[in-house]
Length: 305
Image (cartoon, rainbow, N blue to C red):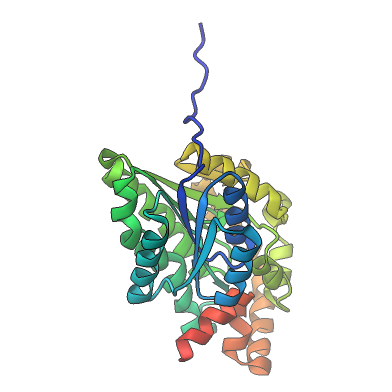
């Protein structure tokens, strides 16, 4: 008799404490609301304090907000201590905080470029390191939000693709390190999801056109609810990988062939975009031309203080 594929058992998140970074809007806020509705206690951690408080107020008594920058060790440790004091521990951590910039390597604003690595990659490491003792104590689950960009490396996204690929590699190494402690580690790869970050990128006068020209499903924007459905299910299963949509998982199987394909398409589109990017920088300045999304603007403002 043929063996049927097996999947990790679904677990109830009722009364579990879930810490989510970058929970002011989009995927982070949506997951907080979904998991709270399932009975979880949710701790929202991020830099946009006012927006996060609004999310916590919508959810009710099972949610609380802490202001912290994932690039600031002291602030992150203070927030985690506050979460543990308030809720009694941490079962699940979702490292969701992330920003994106747009720009070609030769002309992009250096500070904006590097800020993506600080938040999207090192922010995951810091979040997991600070929360890990509490997650180990409860044999819990760590989930990092990577991206389709970890698999397909498009021009104009060198920092974002590198950071998200680094998140995937980091989680793969970490998973093997903590398995004996009863901790599960997952990595999620959502494609373009209708959030503030993607809407802002699409509105960019140069790189929005590059993005919209991607072929087939690679250029399609998917509804937020689709991502939340699949992420919510994966969290309950403590899945090692979550692909949104599921075809992203199939794409990972042929990733070795993708860079040459991207390069062929870039021959026809990048020269014009490169010229337009330089003109945009001359008109608006390198920093303003690079930043996308409200979270990106908030994170960049922190670097100026």
